[in-house]
Amino acid sequence: MAWMPRTYVDARVSVALTGTVLRYIGITPLFPLVLALYYGEDPLPFVAASVVMVGGGALLERMRGDDGELGNREAFLLVSLAWLLVPLAGTVPYLVAGTGTVGHPVNAMFESMSGFTTTGATVLGQISIDRHGHAMLMWRQLTQWLGGMGILVLMVAILPQLSVGGAQVMNQEAPGISLEKLTPRIQETARALWRIYAGFTVLAVAVYYALHLVDVAPNMGLYNAVAHALTTLPTGGFSPEARSIEAFSPAVQWTVMPFMLVAGTNFALFWYVFRGEPRRLVDNTEFRSYLLAVAGFGAVVSALLFLGVGLAETPLNVDVIPGNVEDALRQGLFQVIAIVTTTGYASMDVNAWDPSAQTILLFAYFLGGSAGSAAGSIKIVRWVVAKRAITRSLFTSVHPDAIVPIRLEGKPVDEGTIRDVLVFVLIFLGLFALSTMLLYLDSLRTPDVSLSGLEAMSVAIATLGNIGPGFGIVGPMNSFRLFSDAGKLYMVFLMWIGRLEVLSVLVILTPSFWQR
Image (tube, rainbow, N blue to C red; front, top):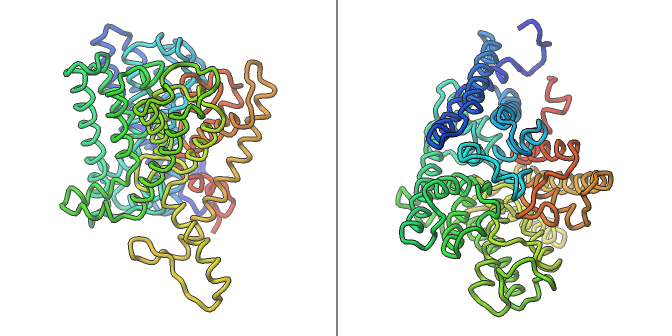
């Protein structure tokens, strides 16, 4: 196309394929549309969303030239564009309905980006969430499910035109160090991952609803079972209930925990399990480290709650009774699993905890689940590699002639990968520190927003790490509504780059990306 300047990136290919992605995503509002008709609610927001997505996608598709190819640079651009334009189109139902907080354009973009990136941060408070119907709340849930395994992994699975460059696309979108190719064809790998993801989602629906049928969870009807399954497996955390999982019985809370753990596990390992190789799961270094981290943090937090040390002097509720083992274990483990897996559900308001328990939980925000899972944040495998790199550096300081490769699962890790891991961790922590400062400064000029240092840190890591709730005014029973529009747009940026592992977005902002 003549209007685009000539560079060493064929932007036409990226834009056109983004249009294709948008056009296919335009089918998904039909699900809440059916619900709207069933519950007697307004179907127009979902009709409009489908029209905008399909129509807009078709227009973008026309920009592709006859000779365009999807190379590595085009894959970077495609991934960044798709994860920006799909959430933008996802605001249409909120804006057309014009109801409540999300009727405002900035709030709509915040909610949509939080949904598709499976962050779970919300501008809907306990009162405003009840103003929305079943269909609109289900749209929120659905956006998280679509984003969990990756909208472009889904596109690679169903679109033949993405099969050639699918490996580059999935490597830029998939969380972790690198994508494990499970089958000879990348399209079959994408399909395998989505089948596992969908299968666990169906299982979660069945198990959640079964609790209702045996009368241990009266309010976990079919609607809530579907809604929560759609946000458990993508580690999303949205809930139609204003008080998240606290609204349900202890039986539900215990049941949600293993599904969150599954969602934070590398889905490729389940592929091996289902093929009769369960040892691949239990022998996996990252998986064992992941469970150890959850057990360690969970034990410390549960002990504090059991002793009453971790509770504020005037607790906001009585969800934890000091000295009650079941209470302490359930609440401590649930919150740790929800944060480590970046699901962001809550079984109680952590604002009822004192700073000691909150600070321990804040460290868990930086862990993340496994590579190849739906979880966000830094990821366990990066911490494993970083720890071994530090250990090796100390050893070679004493033994300078020693050659000590870093191994994972018995295989040496490429030195370039080790460098990339350390660079990622450094950039992530630097961006977290910068964002903490910027969001804290923004709060000083915003009425009704007063952040402590701990709360400002929780806001930054909750959005950059795609985790969801923080502490204080952004606690799990509160919302991000009171922040300024500028602050919320900055958090939209953090959620966007956090979902794409930071570097995938930052690289397209460098001049060298567009040059030879």
